[in-house]
Length: 475
Image 1 (cartoon, rainbow, N blue to C red):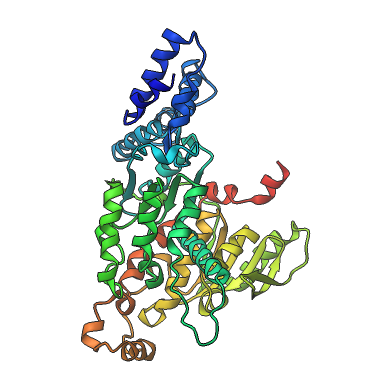
Image 2 (cartoon, rainbow, N blue to C red; image 1 turned 45 degrees about the vertical axis):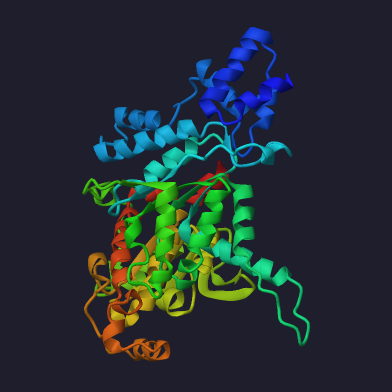
């Protein structure tokens, strides 16, 4: 039996499967040929793949057999309308779903390192305009990936987790002794290995890079993830070559783009239709203008009606986020009544907004002003907040000074002191710095298109009902 083992080293997964079946049928009368499964290292587990194929072959009719079948079913029953761009992307994702059957990046035995590792399949980077269905097709793919070692995360949340892991590893290092130089320690490769042990498939929603701290580590982080056999599927509004466009020290970020394109095929999903803005039943009036008569009293009444159903009293709430206390002045159960100043004028970030999304299913955001360039930082926080709320199906009621489409204005006061101070600190001339996204507001203007699209969908009846956690808790 041992003499047969070398024959399979270097075979493709499909060849391995056929070889195994041939030997099983001819020589072992149905007894499984376990040696082939055992010598599969990081890559395709023949055993798992065979089990899946036998299950499908047995005629499992309990539901759809994959993302493409699911999509076609939703078209047939009228839930979705036919979109050739979505279908084309789903066909590629359906092929990847089939390829990933039985895939694992975990060595199956101590002998795995002595054999050639099967090459993992390429992932996909799906980009296109807002509201075209990128998240929907990725989620459809994710739901059918047949492995427990998979994660679907918002890219913001993923990078927060990465920085927390890096901090933890650095803290665990021995303290430097007085008078001695500390040895340099690079925690990124160990962090990537940790993540790859937890997931062989990673799906990222809203892949965007705006933070220089993220930009500087992405190449090394993802290179190690890919080398550890992680398959990545991501959605974004930007093509790969436009990531971190006009960002600080972008020259150090650019090599990451080549790494991403090496391990992920680029797909464009751009039908020219923002499905979030299509006419759908409204949940009622959820977006109010400051100029409307008695508008504050109207929102107070809405809050009171929602709070009446809560098993709580209206009171301030203090959240604990990474050992920081974040106070919200008015909340009741899963309802929070906040001001724009409370949420976006303070130095809050994605981790704070994710904690809010965990605690609350409905958030009132009052007094959103006109966001000009001198409020660029607040605009970025609002974008991050809406991303977190949308991703967790949190409902919003908004009071703003201007209609939704007009909240962010690219032209405005360019003479604000904070930018000039930062330019001076970085040693940049005003003319040179004007093209950088950190000063121009270009990134915020681009990202705000997504925010407008998402806030539009968040006003629909479907979204409002889906976000009601009280009904889910009863179920």
